[in-house]
Length: 529
Ligand code: G4P
Image 1 (cartoon, rainbow, N blue to C red):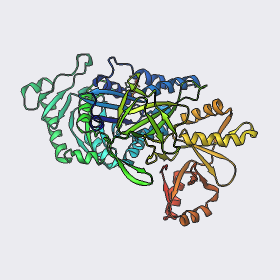
Image 2 (cartoon, rainbow, N blue to C red):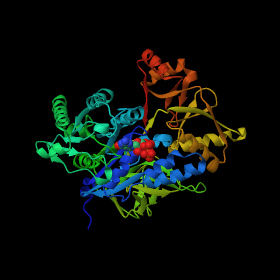
Image 3 (tube, protein in one colour):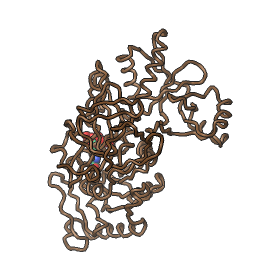
Image 4 (tube, protein in one colour):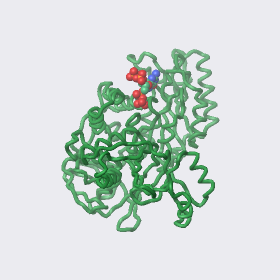
């Protein structure tokens, strides 16, 4: 007997890990899956990381895309809760999908390298979390190496992210002198054993003699002093402020040495939120969709081309927002009104895929289709529900695209529009001239695009350096935008939805024009309707 949709949703914890490359996301993922009982042996996720780094030719990309299909979400049952860990690819395969995945997460774990603090990619991903007020748990990793002063790390979180850090643990030393951490909530000490095969000793009360077998008197004094100071200096952990995205609980650890990972899992179990109510539109009127609603609904946040380039098969990643999904169910797309029977939905258990018989709010299922489903599509039984569009993010790489055979220019336009609709890359049409400018946040997006243009549209394309470095969507009254546009014609363009875009030569130019045109906003993101 299954529970009600509300009860099932209440035990879902859907989260993603955000970090800068090399901070330890793969290692932490693997050890979280181990701690959660999802995988038995180490090495399953690791291998993927290595594969990723050796990517060079198209075959490898295909293989890699295949691999990341099966690992885009990993589900594990732990302590009566169902965790869905969403993959946010980094490195070369960083793309808009990475950002969009965060719109399907209810919480995020931010992994920081203890020696480096907040790095650029962490910051970017954090900003996306902030857009949606996604609660964030901070895991300060690599404490087994020489680390920055933990107070400085907390300061950095507060000043760079404007996020209130609330340490739940306090480390004793780092690197060779790392001895473990004080559990600030219940006055115990969690000892660290450098020899990971032996595992870590059980926690001991702070006020006991037993503690001196794990650190010497000086180290103990230092740890206690630090713990006292940090508690005086920081606000106590407030679960409500965390849920609202203002405060982050902080855990210290070493993913590699499996230290702090159980603590992270229990913090997630205790505080990460289950799926929430979502705003939507039904027949033009605003409504709230609750995880316990009977109608099955959700949205597609990512579409992945299948392994075989000769087939147009795609897997659409569908995040449920309400109801009890059952295999074979018919769902209707709000935009196109098309109905489809979902007969072969896929659920992902670590490295295995299984057919999903049932799924609830918070779950992600893969729906195989032939290109019918697109990023941002809202699906529901009635077809009447529409969820807010997924945001577009200002691209970081802009390229002019040309087709080698000039007779195929018309085809190119259609193909580029198709790929932009799907969310593979963004497309900008400058107001003057006949160029197509494509934009992406990661290099791999161009490779994927070139391959798909060749494979599916028989178009051989060349990417050239564009005279622009940045793109921003314009906001403001029509009159204000027109005033700006009329004096910047050569830098104006429209996106796939005909929204006005300013193409700038540098970030500096954007701040320059922003100052001179205070009535116009230069937006980094745009919600697609
Ligand atoms: P990423 O997914 O965020 O890019 O990071 P990943 O887990 O691949 O880790 C990057 C490097 O940092 C790896 O070393 C990994 O072993 C190491 N690492 C991760 N967590 C810890 C930790 O807690 N302590 C220490 N000391 N190292 C850690 P590598 O040399 O690049 O790879 P490998 O040779 O270990 O496979």
